[in-house]
Length: 284
Image (cartoon, rainbow, N blue to C red; front, side):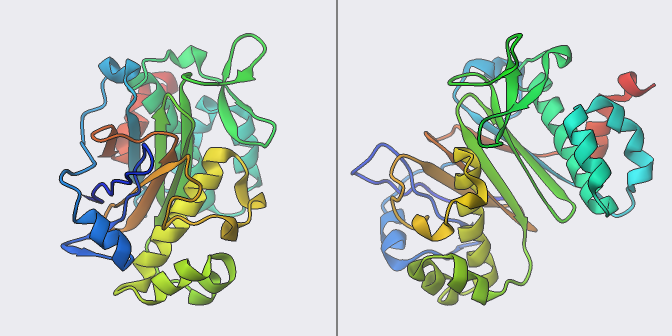
């Protein structure tokens, strides 16, 4: 996994980060110049422990579901997830969508108990006014707020990722694949489209831009109702948010939050069998 380095912006208390591929950076020239002035790496990969529950860390776990795992094999775990997700899974036409949606909530529940110290019995979900999912709080089932535990989920192909923390957060994962540059021309700002076309690897550059935009609109809860051309992820626009982006080998992951400080993002790869093993006692 390769994390970007910090790019300090003297005009704000935030970070703007770029993705590193080996020793090569696919960043605009002006950002590369700023990056060279950075002196420390952003990411600190740490074990997820309950001791971290009161820190301002952002915890990310991701997994890949092997081709050998079919939905029929794990369908019994549907009994452990929320009624709303079970209903959505029942509407999907393909097993891959059913699998990734099921594992997304299972992975989230593992993180909420193991990382954030929650009791399984206390985990319930609701939606905000914009449809963004939250943990329910209190008897009224109101959405989590402020420093309550918050989360974001993403999946692409057979890969799933989840982020948990104590601030509003948006996460996006995209499996690396060939991209259609006309999509960039249609949905991205001209400067972002030029950046992609000028990159050494346009496919990686495309998903660097795409995941950052998706992470932002998931954090705000606006979804695709927000025009992706209304903000840039190559400069401080919008200025109140910070991003970090990493490549896991076969995917690009971006996270967006109000504050992402040094050594406060932890990324861990998890085996899907370990996630299932967490619930064995409940299934038996």
